[in-house]
Length: 220
Length: 220
DNA sequence: CTTACCACTACATGACTATGTAGTCTTGCT
DNA sequence: AGCAAGACTACATAGTCATGTAGTGGTAAG
Image 1 (cartoon, rainbow over the protein chains, first blue to last red):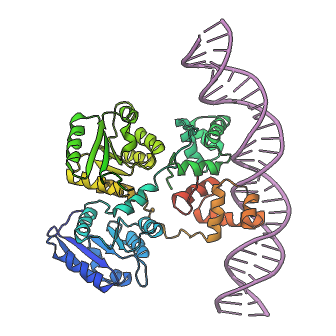
Image 2: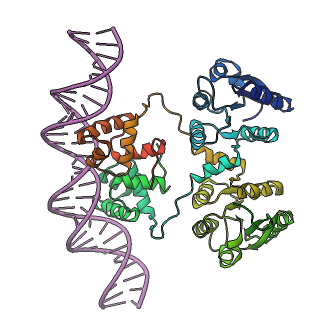
Image 3: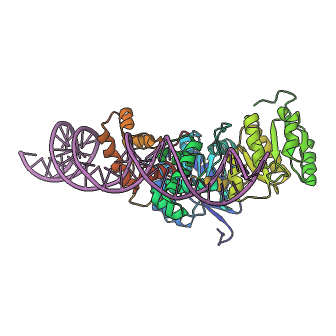
């Protein structure tokens, strides 16, 4: 997390468009505390090179010949888990955004960002933040918003949540009973109430709603 | 989404600390394109007032006497779904952040933000963006990151995903068969494979892993 | 042609779940 | 005290699931 040498932020760029690549490279390299180690036009070239291991930040396009940016992030996430990757693309459709973030990108910018914002984004990412264009951020935030709850959704109680967690793990009533110190019928009693409150009548539905309403959090 | 009158962004502040409240009020009201309609020290007061219906942005503290900021956002989300609420607090613990976002907040700032960043955040929010302090953004993004997949996790096929979706809805094998045009035993065949690939042996576990690995997306 | 694999069908069986009904014990309310 | 509600125990039963084993037809590889 620290810049060991010269406090420089070492950047690697992967971008197939030559003008974009050289433009960014020039802009960023001009900053006194940045250094662009190298820039590549494909993931394959970048990953074959030595410099990737020395980078602090990777700036990656999403559409690339050969291995896509998404695949590239997955690869980097596996090989260099602590190396932050910022996606920068012209596309802001949901699929690309969420695929990139799921794959491990720490930030997502539109290519039209101003040089100033790009520089700030790199500093943010290097400092452990997650730079995003505001409307990308809104997409992300919106996934957290709950569908406005109907009036009559009863809240699950602590004991019920506890049991719902165990249900999600696939345990039998007997096994759950051992964990929460209840008889099998005691477990059944609570599960009836859970089903009624969530308005379901199978385990799987209960688990599904429990997770999607963020009542419980899977640990897989 | 448009400022109809005078192009002004109309702001309401809910913050119990008097100095904070007056400080923000002064800073924001001084901007030529902002107007602070009013500021309140509790949600109850704010919601009783008329001005809330005229606001473009609400800036809300999370710790408040009486109704908490989280509760406040929930209320506003229900009564004024299109009114963006920005949470601003001294706490950046995960629970507060995610509770606030789940409740419907569009942004989340630390109280230590500079006046410049606060103004920018309000402009972003009003324009449909989601302002966040960079380290908050990282927390949010991290929830998307998949646990680096073990080598041996087999990918589910299209047909299997289709069936997993139905499993999450709690349907019986027979009911699933009707949807995907398969015999009950055909459904069973795929489910065996799903269980093997996800390394589980109950419906609920399969659903739980399917959702948490974002293989399927619940529709509750 | 043979071998192998895949998608699917078929059947059997023990285990588990969903649901109804009912009784006990505790706690709070009037 | 009397009553209602909540938390739990108990039992019964139809329905569903998980798993093993086995067979068929299609298609790709050797």
